Image (cartoon, rainbow, N blue to C red; front, side, top):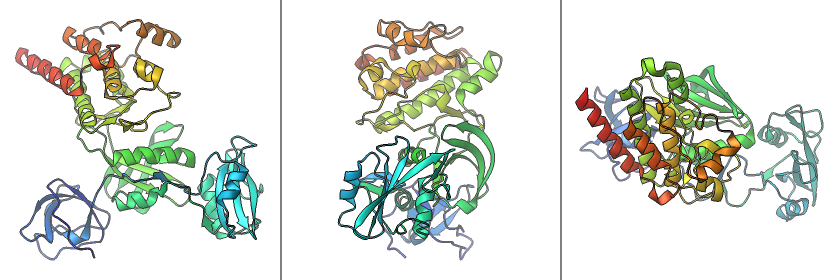
Length: 451
């Protein structure tokens, strides 16, 4: 067991490394993998007062728990460190030199785009096996079929099954670190046996979003089957481990299975996405105070990202979820990056993205502010699609000439003025999220006085 470190501050989340049954009434029993929150350090530095996810409080032994930390590795997180992407046959052979029987890597096929090649060192030379996609499955010999590369590699690790040798040692791509290890080290790994998947609540290209039960808690689970997609979602999960705010959807943990399946477990948001919520309830149900509360909730989350130097890049009502108690939480951190990085713009939602981000790939908090203005318009138009009646191809040219959408019906002029400030063509002239929050709070106070 480890030495006790410097006391952790109040509010620190930690994960149980062992089971603890408790030895007195003051103790809080827990099981390995439970998440606990530190309330105070007791007079004895070997014990903390903590609470569990059900809100029960008690003392816990400090050396039975590990602090939960954001996953920020020095290298690129990888589910498949043996996958080297687009390299040539010659480059693969150089990487597998000096030859060592069973040393292997997988690369994208140069001659057959969309297929892969397994390169294996065997008796002093390198063999190249083409991996073919057939009816959505991968195969080398048309006898064994696999859902993804991780399943295929796992199979040939156990058995040569027609190859010159079984796969013994992966040639790790330089600069990568094993994603599974990093999530475990940060205290984010969950146990698959404790997760019961229930029904599908959403479908995407990547897989399904399901409602599940994790040790008695209702959770939402992104189930990702395809390994190339899973790799992108690992990046999203690592961003989520670094963010913690009441108006951001909270990551609860990650499960990586041997066969390449990835499960990202988050808090469950009972009322679904904001755009559907607005459309289904409409004006008869939602008054001005409800709309303003949604606007403020999102603004609080975005101010937190602004302070921590994260840029969301995909802010829209479809990426905001509504909880049981009607609070709005920003989700979908697939494109979220630290402020300094660049982004491929091919998949960006044109109507929500600022002109400079589309034109020059310049993303910043100020481009998020532009998107926030569009989101405000969505809130006050009860979920309408932005730029109604304008063909998609005409949106950018018109916006760049200074076009701004009209004020939604029934939207207060003060709120519409905020939208227009967000849509300033000059990024530096747009307000910060801190300013936006102050303006909205001021409007909120004014509304309360008149009620």
